[in-house]
View (cartoon, rainbow over the protein chains, first blue to last red):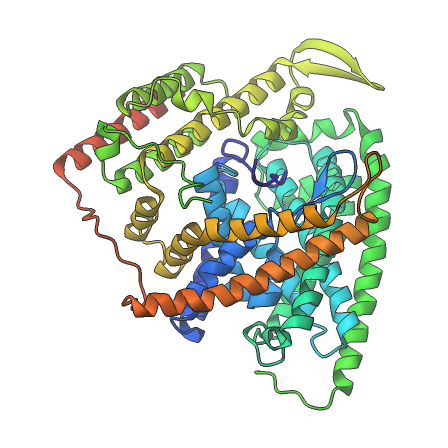
Length: 317
Length: 263
């Protein structure tokens, strides 16, 4: 294998039709927004740039480093792409990468590609860019720290939404799939975070102009900060809830009409077995999530205050 | 690396190869959609879908077992579906102990699990078939005809075209890292995990800059060759009668599968 697959590329058959179509609709809306924004703001020169950048993300996913026991860490790249290229361009680049992985290498299905693009491309870009953008006025070390947290959270969010879709499709049991996915990706996310930070710091040193105040990547609007923080908070607060109180989430989903009575089979299994497994990794997940949310809150607050002190702001509205 | 290192296209002369790429894309998607629509346990319809797949295999001149041999790529993902075996209420089939848990496989759970696996297995084979019988640039072109935004198809086309160049770049970086990481026999080279990750990150940053600068040269080279905002192809891509007939026939067969699956 030329690249190690993430346990996040859902193949066809694992999501039901309704979940696949809803994901496709959300993805299509976001992509068309990205297309119209980039068509407006970018010259024809930017299209080859984005194409080569898509190849860069694809190739960068092959750079791995040995962790332990034969496993290796590598990059997913959503946060890095959004920070370096700007949010909309990052989304298009990630969409192209996931489309080629699905189409050419069957790494991820075609009908479920909407979900894969949403989980690994769009959500990761929104979180990565939103959080990074929230501290755009801060000093270098601080920005890099936030970029690392953003990269870690973007992987966690992707895993969380993947787990949620698998559950809504009736493929997995909620109280197992969420802790399991989050646990695995908590480790994968660490690799993502370190590589993202190191790559960013390298580029900041070698070509600071590419990431400066006037670059493409600094032009995203403030709305991204809200979107990025909002999605992060959803993940941070909903994932412990989903694992401790699956009945609660089940009820919400039923009330909202996500799952009909046919899917109520997920209900009785709540007290079925393996609450133990859920609880063990769960306590770690909760502790981690709370820790991260505290750090994140402090980071965003500190970033805001630092930003106010910076005198000159030539950011676009 | 050669430019077709990532190609999954199998060049041969066959009825399927001659079809318009749009037909192949649409039929592939219809087939995968149909698998998702078939209810759990519609074994007859799943069996017929497999026959349909074998028919495509036969018509493609690639051998009956062509997609079968490559069809296990999605299998590891089955792990995420394993909980349905025990979680769906039904008649117990078998009970066993795993670590500290007593797990009971139910018949309904088994039905659901097998249905998910079969759907995935059939769908991935058709996706494998698609890239084996259509050149990737043709597939991208078909997507453009099917109203995928041209900025996206252009990015995909560029990604495909320059992937092997950048992968070469990655191999150079990896080779350089190997050569720097000499170690005495028996001892490990390199530092802590964090240090190794930082090295990987520097490589990613280096790759970014090289790609970025390369994209400038690519753009200039393309301008020099008359690039005016979109990629062109010399393939005519006209739908002939045989394309229409095949598309209608294939879609009808797939609809028939749905009817049989719901009887």
